[in-house]
Length: 292
Image (cartoon, rainbow, N blue to C red; front, side, top):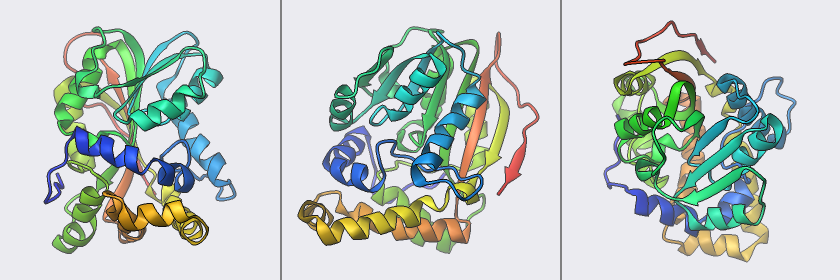
């Protein structure tokens, strides 16, 4: 597990997203996650929605199903799946700014709450499906992140995680100059490997139904964000102010670092599909690891 040299907590994560709210929406968009390219001809907006639709497909969502979006951001993923799949979604974010933005775009059957997932207050076995798109990285206690998902899901429920992952056995240079700074600058308490995620999932009682490495199909997200940021800095005084004076301005440094981390193979992007067994603890199932 990669751990930054400055400890991070939920308060720091919330402050990061609240302060940089204009930057995230301008540079990364309302979904605040990577795009997934299949043909390479997709627009950034189409690629972002493709990742959401991939998550919905792997969850096997059914109309009327109660779902949980762990780390829902602005609620864009929750809204899209509620509309396209007919499900109800309870979303959790640490950011009051994100929740306020979501409140201005209400969709029936979507409830966005400002609350820490590690203290979510949901009843046992109350959801049929859950997803976490690039939010597990912000969890201070990752084993508890998995344990809470397992507790909240009904037997047979599915859990899909899209995660920033550290390269297995990454060398010292990659850790020191790429992975550890990315954690520090992005307010990530830790970054795990595929193997560490699978071990935590199984310890929580999940069966691992599938895994796919889609690093090559998502990596172009960051050059796009870099171009958007440069353009915004040139034309928008507010962007320049945040880049130069904000408490969390160091995140700007992570964009070129993320581009290099993907190219060097130091960082991977994995999609896990987990299932809560009908009863008792789950065991490792056959997995499909399609490395891009």
